[in-house]
Length: 414
Image (cartoon, rainbow, N blue to C red; front, side, top):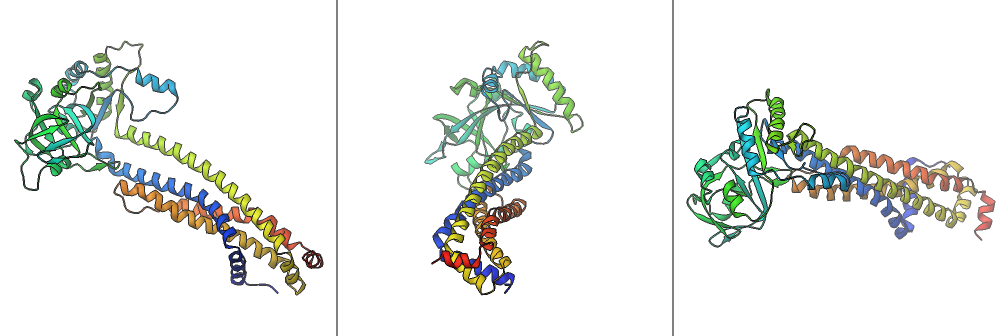
């Protein structure tokens, strides 16, 4: 009496349904392992796609010179190395600009303070506005246009004027549609500034708005903002052809401005779109490896749980096995049923983990304003791994069940 595949699956499902709680707990073990890998890989896929759409954050042919790299990996030695670096000062930035003036299209200075709050009348922003100090080259070097009013000029820098240009998000929050912000006075962290312009909308990069900022003259910033911070220098090359050559010249000019001797290493970083991508790739590799290890250990533990439950099931159903064999059921049919039961437990957990993991990972995709992401490769891999887990850890209990002697099985069950 050989059962068809459909009959075998139905019979296995019916047997599992008899012990719903036990089956659910075993399935949950597999689900945890699959959940961790699917959730992480979906989130990383969202970050990866955001990188592809966010590379415009620096603009074409543009790079930045900063005190520290975008991300720091490694132990305390590396962190101390960057922490002990001197800030890039206003004097050094001015020297750099003098050395590079004939070799770049635009050179802009930027210094920022996080968690600022802007207000106008009764309208108050959240305390997440970026207060930015910059010069007249800030806008062209960062691919921004002034759509209302004017840009900063040399006079604003020379006299450290109390003027400000608003990012589009801040302007939209503080002023009603159709209202012209130019000439109005706003407060940023209690300081009063006169709005002289509004920037065009640039959009989000890596899930973060690039328009939630207030720009003031960098000289005003250095005089008024009571915090120590390093200046970032944005450089726009004259063309893509001269981009690499401009980076090399900028490194030399910055070394001169910082007073570095030939034997001293660079104490600053060059940030390009490519380096930004590499930083995120490093994060992806580390997080992905960690998730894989955690998932592997969880699935291994779940596999042992499946084997344990199936061995218990064989013991509890010894009489059933003896009766079926005594009426002509071949050993192969017994083996297939128990193997299918283990496989159903594993695949059921895998399916649950995929749904939950994809849902959790897509919460990250929502933060980056991306559509629903399904990591099909990892979904297929997860199902294949669950199949291997189910078959591998269910094979011994299934074999044990199929090798029972019918007479001994019926006698043992009395």
